[in-house]
Length: 259
Image (cartoon, helix red, strand yellow):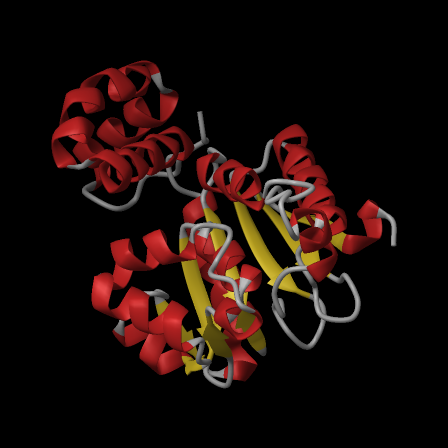
């Protein structure tokens, strides 16, 4: 399947929607990765201010394309492409990204969702790190990101037992942000993505950098880098708009332009 048809790209106002449609189960491999990269490039070129990642199939993603593993078997120990590099690309993408999870979201599919800033999941969805069932552990950093979100005990449980969990459990453990009734998932995900898109785009980008730095290197490292990272804010039109709106209309009424 060509990359362009692995991920359908559409633009709804300031939001770019990436809809994975890589039959049969959105398996994560070179084709889907390339389609995602093309979609993010399209978002940048279109001037979008937030990304909604969803599935156009029954399931969000059933994991990795096992053809990735062939080259690494035996003494080679090297995957044909680096899934971790791809995840880092998504995590560092400057725009807010929201994942709308439905159906099965396991293995590399869960790691794909974890690379997004917010995760909304349908109530009937099932999520988990199931790589141990084929003798592996997560290859895109799920273990360490689960430690960040849920603590070491839960991270070990998820990756060592390789179970599928209901969305309510994942919300309780802070793996995802919110559970939504199935019939409301797409509307709820679009609403929160649109809210982010209408916010101060530069501030959101800097928030992502500070949060990622704190998660990777600790609060002190984030504190030391924060003022430098925030310097561009003081020249942004959105800060001027926000301050003027606060003084003239009160809080929460600013209409930002994303620059």
